[in-house]
Amino acid sequence: MASPNLTSVDDALTYLLAQATAITRTETVSIADSLGRILAEDHSAPADVPPADNSAVDGYAICQGDTSPDQWLRVSDRIPAGMAPRPLQPGTAVRIFTGSEIPEGADAVVMQERVEHIDDGIVIQGAVEPAQNIRRRGQDLAKGSLALARGTRIRPQEMGLLASMGVSQVPVLARLKVAILNTGDELVEPGKPLGPGQIYNSNRFTMLGLLAEAGCEVVLCETLEDTRKETRATLQRAATQADLILTSGGVSVGEEDHVRAVLEESGKLSLWRLAIKPGKPLAFGEIGGTPLLGLPGNPATVLVTFMMVAMPYIRKRQGRPEVYCIGERLPADFEITSPSIRREFIRARKNVSGTEITVAAYPNQNSGVLSSACWSSGLAVVPEHTTVKPGDLLTYYSFADLLS
Image (tube, rainbow, N blue to C red; front, side):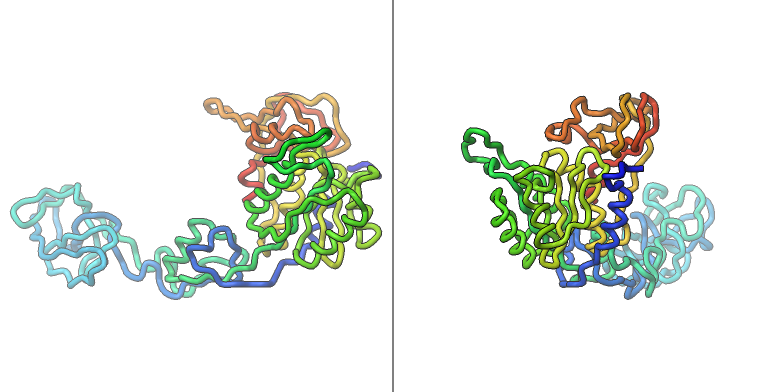
C-alpha cells in the first residue's frame, strides 16, 4: 500500500496502460530492414515449409524395406541440393546431401559415417529405422498455419522464418515518434568546457539509447530553458511532432520545475508522485493532445523509471501483446534493514558461483550514481514496507529483458 500522497507503482501502471492507445500507422519494409519492428498483420504460411521431404544429413537415401544387415547396395544416383531427384531404383542407394529432396521410393537416409564403401556401392553398418534423418514436408510450417501474429517484435529468428516462407517485404507498424526534452540551464553538451555550476547532459544520451533499444523514432531532442514561457512553447511545439513527449527533470516541487506547472496550466496532469524509489516525482499528462511522461532528473532515476514505467507504456503504444517483463526469483546477497513506503528498484548484479545464483546490490544506490547501472546487470525489486536479509527471494529483472 502506498502513502496517501503517493500513487502505487501498480496503480500508476494500470492507469498508464489504460491511456496507451496503439499506433495504427503502418509501412512496408524489406525483410533485411525489419529487425526490431512490430508486425502489422498476421503471417500465415503460403506453402508447406519445407516444401518437400529432404535430407537432414549427408549420406545415402534408401528404401528401408529393401535392406538387411550387411547387405551391399549399389549407388545408382547422386542428388545435390537444389536438384529435382529421379526415383530411387529398387535395391539401390542414392548419394544425397543435407537439404537435398528425398527421391520417390526412398524412406530413410543413412548418415555417411555409418556406411562402408565397397566397389561402386555401400554396406550399411547397423539397423535402419523408417524415416530416419528425413525432414518431412511441412514439419516447420504447414500451409495455411499461423506463423507469426500481429504485434510480434521481429528478432533475427523471425526474419529467418519470414524468409523461409518467401516473404521479402514486411508490413510493420510505424515507429513510435518520441520527443526528448531535458530541463536545466546547468546542462552542457559533451565536448564543451564546463563553467561554474554546470554539468554534462548525460540524460539526453541515456534516453537516446533507451529509445533506440525500444524501437522508437526520436523526432526532437532539445534542452529546455528554465523559464515557464520557453518550456510551454517547446512542449507545445513537440506536441505537434511526436506521439509521446519524454522529459527529464522539471517535475518536482522546485521553483524552476516548469514542466509540471505547464501541464497543470496549459494541458493536463494525470499522475504525479509515485511510490517508487528512485523516481518519486514522476509525472504523466498531456499537452496539445499528446501524452507526456515526465521522468525525474537524476541520471540513475531516468534509467530505472524508463525501464519500469515507460517501457510497459511504450510496448502498449507499439501494439505489442506482452507489455510486462517477466522476472525471476533469486536469493539476495545483501540486506536492507530500514523498510521504505516506496517500492525500491535496486541496481544489482546477477552472480553465478557453481550451481548457486544470487543477486548482489551496488553499494551506493544514490539516484545520481549512474556508474551503478554500468556495474549492474539488472534491477532487484524490494517491495514496500519490506526488509531484506541475505537469502531472501527477490524478483530480479535483467536489463536485456526490460528493454526487449
